[in-house]
Image (cartoon, rainbow, N blue to C red; front, side, top):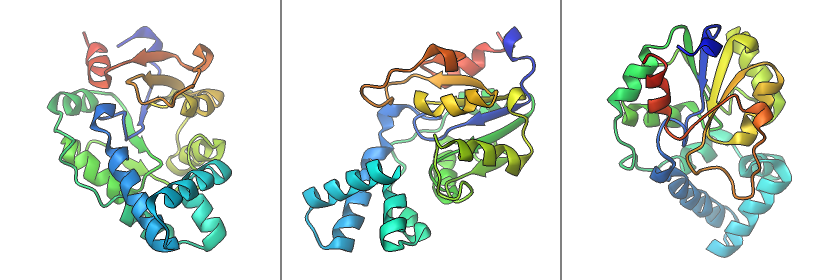
Length: 220
């Protein structure tokens, strides 16, 4: 174990593009479902639906937040619909399962998705049963990462001490609120970061291109 990590007793992982390669691009499939949802809801074509999606994303933080605020959309119905995708792009990762199982302490998923979707992804990866808890968008009261309230709510819900927790995430911007409350941060820099992002080293403690290799190296 790296000397700087001996104090860690809780390992928190983002889900998408963190526990599987960004090249799987599940988001492309989710994006297609979201576009279809908006086309059906507003009776518009794909281009108009895309504009609505992006407008709500920028004005409300997520498309779902905009739909809930402006139209009273049921979040469960929306998430069930957009997450209804095949998982054949995701392969089992026995090495990652072993590496996570070897970590001392608690392990938690912290995702802007929902629990049913997270369970399907973890099942496809062969990581079912590896985590004590799945903290999802419903648990965040629909205030997703990087909203600071999401991190505070995570710690409160599961009795976590931020200063003895490590958070692994592919979006660098989502690591800043974690660092602000004292978490150790691991940036999984695998190409999924949004274009134009300028991650600041001050809130990134560790960086890797491969979460499996990084975790395995802790014991070598």
